[in-house]
Image 1: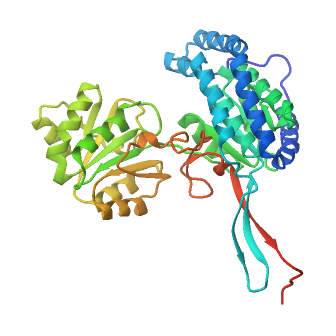
Image 2 (image 1 turned 180 degrees about the horizontal axis):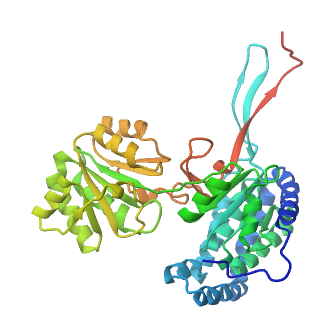
Amino acid sequence: MTDMHNTTGATPDYHRLMLETGARARDAARELARAGTAAKNEALRTLAQSLREGREAVQRANALDLDRARAAQYKESFVDRLTVTDAVLEGMAQGCEQIASLADPVGEISDVHVQPSGIAVGRMRVPLGVVGIIYESRPNVTIDAAALTIKSGNAVILRGGSEAFETNRVLGEFVRRALASAGLPADAVMTAPTPDRAFVSEMIRARGLVDVIIPRGGKGLIARLREECRIEMIHHLDGICHTYVDAAADLDMALSVVDNAKTQRFSPCNATETLLVHQAVLEAFLPRIGAVFAQKGVEMRCDAASLAVLSRAGINACAAAPEDWDTEYNAPIISIAAVDSLDAAIDFIARHGSHHTDAIITNDYTAAQRFLREVDSGSVMINCSTRLADGYEYGLGAEIGISTGKLHARGPVGLEGLTSLKYIVTGHGEGRH
C-alpha cells in the first residue's frame, strides 16, 4: 500500500532533510541530558493538560487521517487503531502523568567500590542520545514515545506512519510547546518533516546523528529495517509465545491462565500462540481448555497425541502442519503439543520460540526455577499469563517496545531501557604504577 501523502513537484532532498533534523535533535539531546527532573516532570504534566484541553484540535486532525484511510480502503481493524477517541486521549494524558511520577533514572550512581589503588569506581546511568522511532498507525505511540524519551533525557525523532501524519503533527506540536513551557529544548522531540518513506531510508543510515532505532510495527517493517538499518536497533520480529502446563500444575489455575493468555486479545505480540501440555496431565487438562477454546471460536492445530485426546472428548481440532510451530498467528488460532518432560518443553521452546515471552504453570519449585534459568526469552513467567508482558503491567509507566535481543535491554523497554551505563571514577591524585 502506498503512502497517502504523495510529494508533488520537485523531489525533496531527503538526505539534507535528515541532516538538518538530526543536527537539531543532537543539539537538543545534549541540553536535555543535563536537564533536572523537575523540569522534565513539568513538561510531562503540561503535556497531559494540553492533551485534555486540545481534544478538539487532535480529533479534527485525526478526522482528516481517518477520511484518507477509508478512501484508501484500509481494513476496519487498521482504521480502529488509527482512531483517537476521548478514551484514547485520556489514556495518553494519564500515561504522561504516570511517567512523571516515576523515578528519574538519569544520573543514578550504583555499584561504587574502592580499589586497592585508592580510586572509587562506580557506574552512572545516562541517556542514549538521539533515538529514532519508526512506527505505524497508532497515534498514541507518538505521546508514549515522547514522554518516555523526555523523562529518560533523550531526544527523539518520531516517524509515524503516513496514514497518521496529520494527527501526529498536531500531537508533536503539543509536545514541543510543553517542552518549551518548562524551559527545555523543543527540538528534543521532532516529528519527521515528511511522511515519505524515502526519509526512513535516510534516518536508518544516519550514524553520528541517531544513536539507536526502535521500530514499532508489523513484520514487514521490522524485517526491512533489519536488512537496511546501519544503526543499533531495539526491536523484536516475532511474538511466538508459549505456555507450558507442567505435570505439577494446578489445573484450575492453568485453565484460567491459558484462557487469558490466548483469548483476552488475539492480536498482541504477547498472546500465547503455542500451548505445551505434559503427558501426565494431558487427559485431565486438554479437554477442559479445548472446550473453552471451542466456545470462543479458537481453532486448535494439534500434534497427534493432543488431537487424539480432543477427538475422544468430541472437540473439533485439526492436525498441525510443521510451519504452525513457528507461526505467530495474532488470530483465534493456537498450536497445541504434548511433551513428556520439562526438558522436552524447554527444548521445544528453544527450537520454535522467538525469545519474546514464555510461561510455565507448575507448583514444582525446582521445575519453575529451571524454567526461569533455561528458557532464553525477554520475559519468562511462572503461573501467570503471557499477556502481562507489558510496560504498564511491569510498572515501567509505558513501554517504547519489546526487545528480544541479547544486549542492553530485553523484554518491555521503559525508562531504564532508554539509558545506558558509563563508568565513573574518583580519586585523590592516584596514578598507575
